[in-house]
Image (cartoon, rainbow, N blue to C red; front, side, top):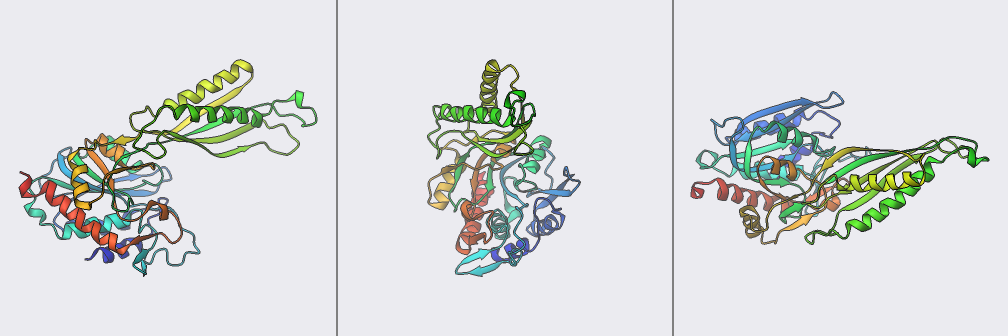
Length: 380
């Protein structure tokens, strides 16, 4: 099957993270086996009780659990939700050289290209083990990849992690961290402010201190990134119960994206320090900082074999990404990981998401050549 045909089949299956991905994985398993790969399924039930499957398909028939593969191609099967008004979200539609559909860019396009590439590879003649790894729940925290990293069903020397990069190899990426911050005050009638203590005011004080932390982090740069430092964002805030009641509680979310080499806990430590400073000024300053996600960044050396190979195969110099990927989990499994794939991240997650058809086809050829280069007979 051509990459476009495979992509049409993938887009037609709704694999939003909140839904089971069983139908999609079953289809992908059939395609992998048709290419001569030996497949293994890793099931789990997510926190909502939804059934999920992850697929590891290897070229070696006698591959042992925990064994090492030379190269892994990694893609996530889940997508973000789509607006019900987008009538063609699950129907791949081509217009002016663009293939539209939910997941076409992020990252069913990469998966389709990988499967099309494998159909042109003589799998039985590969000299080094190869793996196709298809995960679940990337869009809600890389949860499936974290399960695989913890279980260790394989080790990898090199990994191409599928994400829309416009076919430019990305050798490093920032991490992704999230916390909920809770401020507590004392309710009272707003006409008598001295009888209460506003949690919203306390939240505002801490948010102001967080802005100072953000400026402090600019003094710890990583020149390979844009912006070249860890970034912070207070994305949601909610507090109070009525306009004439002193707010008894206020909550906000704090997000940060640490550069590689920086402790992901650093921002939480700095924010706690600022909160404790406010407590020194107000002994009743009551706060709680609950970290819910703590994923560090990942970086592969600029002279790593996979980086150099993809630069040569694409004719594009390697760069970095500021968004979270599954590269850190593949690094846990031993891999020099590079993020790569067709499509532009700026059109992902939106109504009218698309992947250029030409990039999809080019990606398939690049992946085929990468598999042959790292796993073919000449690699011995």
